[in-house]
Amino acid sequence: MKVLVIGQGGREHALVWKLSQSSVVTKIYCAPGNAGTASDAENVQISDDDIPALLDFALREKIDLTIPGPEVPLVMGIVDEFKNAGLTVFGPTKAAAQLEGSKTFAKEVMLAAKVPTGDYGTFDDIEPALNYLKERYGGGYTREVVGNETEEDWFKQPASGRSPVMYQPIVVKADGLAAGKGVKVCESYQEAVDFVEECLSGNKFGEAGSRVIIEDFLDGAEASILAIVDGKTIIPLEASQDHKAAHDGDSGPNTGGMGAYCTTPVVSPEMMDEITQTILIPIVHEMKRRGCKFSGVLYAGLMINKQGPKVLEFNVRFGDPETQPVLMRLKTDLFELLYAAASGKLHEFEGLEWDPRPAVCVVMASRGYPDVYKKGYPIRGLGAQPGTKELKVFHAGTKLEGGEIVNSGGRVLGVTAMGDTLDQAKLNAYARVKTIRWEGAWCRKDISDKARPEIEAPAEAPTEEPTEE
Ligand code: GLY
Image (cartoon, rainbow, N blue to C red; front, side):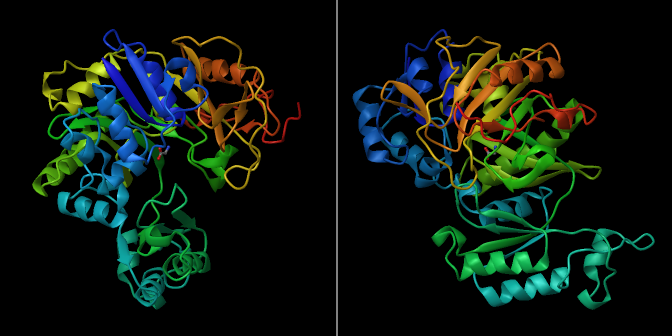
């Protein structure tokens, strides 16, 4: 079977690597890929949003299964185009991809499906947005809990009568796709006002920011659920936990994800059942009811606290870097799973097999990321080894230049390892991290510590200080 993976990040490298272990896959192409996918597949120089060129290639090469990695081609409608041409493709249609392409659409679906999520308002114009901010958050953002007052009681009071004490950030989101930069957790009322203005009048994100969502902040532990769906059958993969903040202890700016581990104690088997019953099934039913059956990866980004799980966001693709540790643990043939989903035959699929050992992925990044960073530094220490089933350096922002592998993106590598325990998996990943160097390389030192708050970061792991060659 011939497979085309579309994209160029760590997620796509992990997909290519896992597909290469399939007994039925004979050839894997990756478009456009990176320096890592070049060693596990054949890279094709077509950009991930050039749908006509991708379609021509897939038809010419008689590709049996296409797997678009990133959200952009999905939201553009690549699945519809490929299906219309008679090709088998894993992912949601353009209409169903709106679950990630429009945060307002996702909220409307959640509301209709009675799926738990934060209260919100959605706005196209500045004045009503600022009025909502003032009315709901009273021009402030902290309050004290008085007596038995619940959060709901507090919100019901007029702004002027509310007690001031509990810390209450405000979340503002650009409605459309904004390359991971469209969500801001505002620490002050003024920050929320500024971000709303930047989106709605400052054109910060162009069309994607011409509508905003203002949402209550949700507290708790985050978890990522990736579920394989074929329109009716849902097979959740094991849960993982991402680390979105740039620095240790979840401080610093938001990033695409600085590391992840799988599985996470935040999602017990009982919690996974609750998530399936209260979130995944209702969403898949509601999408079908609306005439846009969901097929592909339903990625639920959750906040879990004593009140149960609530949805922060939906994505319609594999998470990055969550995919790296999740797929390292998957023993089932990935091609068979995704092909069954793309063919509407997931109900025939007989469960999944997992390696019981935990896996940890540590992202190594370029100096300056998530802001401005320099590219083109040669990466040392990658070695000729292709990796093993227990330890793999997944490439994200890398490319071949003048015979050397250099950094070409902000998130550069996802060093992923398994271990008999989570501590051992973490040690194995960081031991490999220490052998890799380029100018400005850095990583978080505490990936997976959220599973065990008492764990100290390893003293010798690279810091965010630049490392000169
Ligand atoms: N790791 C977050 C995402 O894939 O959106």
